[in-house]
Image (cartoon, rainbow, N blue to C red):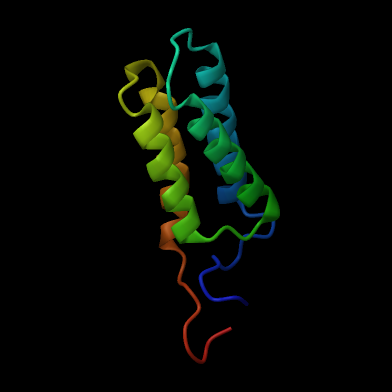
Length: 105
């Protein structure tokens, strides 16, 4: 297993939860009427999160980086806060998995 990848993500319910949370935020963002200067950044990172969840082996540091970019782009939009919180909670579930270390597979 490659270092930095989260173990045990094949058919992982956390990946499914991340995909649901990303889909919700994408829907809420698409329905938001305001012109957001960083909307494209948020859309790109949401697509990246979805792709990582579909691949089944997301890199924790990449998940967190995407979350940071999305929060920076959308964090001041209170209407999107509940959906953004769900994405964060879904990503946080991956941080509780032991990472492979020296001598472990």
